[in-house]
Length: 193
Image (cartoon, rainbow, N blue to C red; front, top):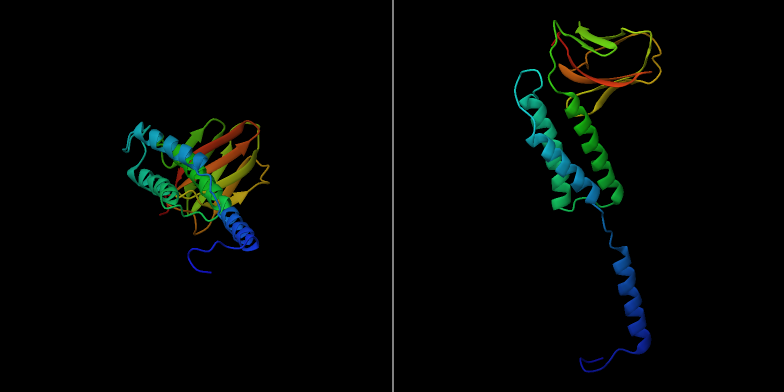
């Protein structure tokens, strides 16, 4: 066939079908929810105070949270996700980092002991100690590092005291304690480090 000849109809139909199949195979990723959460995280960061006083967030916590925000934005800007599941996983990671960051606000604490509502958390000897100060037992305990990675979990505590020990207790961590009264997030300092 030279440049002036038209393709036979059956070849044209086959070519159109191949083109349509190619277009259908192109994966489109919906980043709208991820972008909305990135915007929410950025707005939250604009309203915080960085420092070492009660009600502040440490620069280290801000830097770690910002790194997760930046990685999420890079995924969108560079269209790095090859599946919707990858974008959804990044959304979940950013939401978890946001939750952990919000809980990392500096509170007043004495001698490594933090009291919040019905739970007291203390640390010594590479261990975290949790105690319910009410009749409600601790049901579940989750310990996260400042990057938001789960480093310990026990979903079947059902006791008024709980101890998490080991060499993997970070210097600063976020502890999520679940009781019958709800969920409490605590920032814990490992005094042994």
